[in-house]
Length: 262
Ligand code: NAD
Image 1 (cartoon, rainbow, N blue to C red):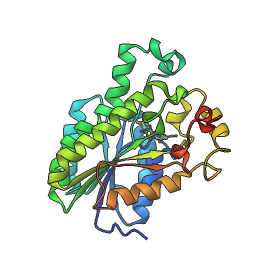
Image 2: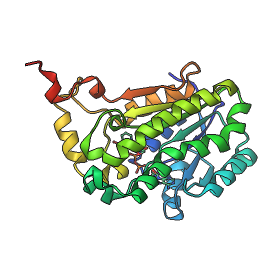
Image 3: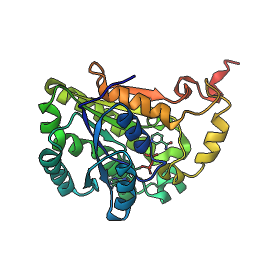
């Protein structure tokens, strides 16, 4: 059993009790880790506080990643009220729903840039603003959530696949950049989970239904499995720049059309 007593973590991306970040927060709490939460908007604040309070979280910060000033306020707030930071979870993504409905070649510059700003670029200002806190302890660690659509074409994932590819390589460059300060940066590639973000992806339910029968484990992963792996990746001191799959083995399969040599 992981013991994170005395460790402090920032958890971004809790929107509701289905959020992957919420499952990860529960795993961190069970391991004894103290946490601060961010919420995207004032509209979400009440719900996020209610969840956080059930785990004894007492520090909350507004973080809309399109607002650079929020990163400065977050870092200053954590330094003054939280007194240090060992881990940071990036569990944030967004793409305009209409971008999923159009053919890939019709994706607009506005939608492309917005998806990348929120889902990939945001990892950079998060690391930049938290760097002094993460470097001050005995080894900082940042974990970002990704999906297999970054590696291969998953047609329904569309623009978000490109943003996730950008997120994954951004994490590797950050890992190399921040490694000398003993800050690790990793990604966790989760299999599909029914959350608010997933509900915005047309065909998501269908993908889950179809893929269940071909997954090596013949079932989907649970958020608890993702959360346990996330807590491990945040804590382990020897892993950096990696993308770890927690997807019931889905990523090892060849596409249906490539499976038979005939
Ligand atoms: P979710 O909707 O619960 O979480 C997405 C979060 O992103 C929300 O908390 C939302 O407030 C936040 N967000 C969106 N725009 C933001 C902005 N401008 N500033 C700050 N925060 C913003 O859904 P989830 O499925 O838990 O997603 C969490 C992460 O997991 C995402 O990176 C997602 O791509 C990734 N992921 C999800 C799945 C899945 O199947 N659900 C699979 C693999 C990876």
